[in-house]
Amino acid sequence: MKKVALLLLFTISVLMSTELAEFVTNDHNLLYGRDAELDYYLDTREGMISDVIDQVRAYPSFSKRLWGVKQILHILSQMEFHINARIL
Image 1 (cartoon, one colour):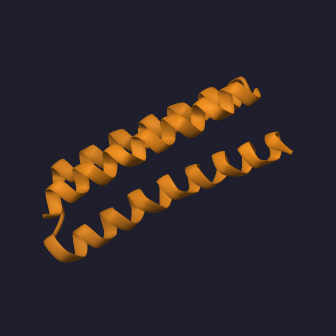
Image 2 (cartoon, helix red, strand yellow):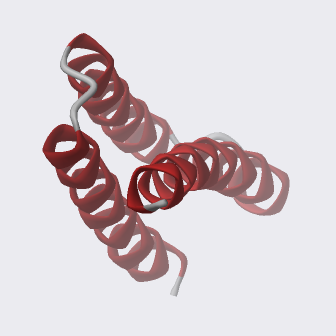
């Protein structure tokens, strides 16, 4: 049961990170026009998330999935902080 819950949590965190990056980019572009610095920042974070996903897929153990969830949530919190600082 724990493995299924963790796999579901990992999948949700991956989907959230992808949707957040796409939503923020689209929303920011509509409000302020294209911002090369923000685009670069989001692209690098998207790359970091892709790296985490690749590492979890390479070694699909319980502990690696848990590590992946923690890493993606950490990246998302960094993204939220950076985006809020840029917009406000």
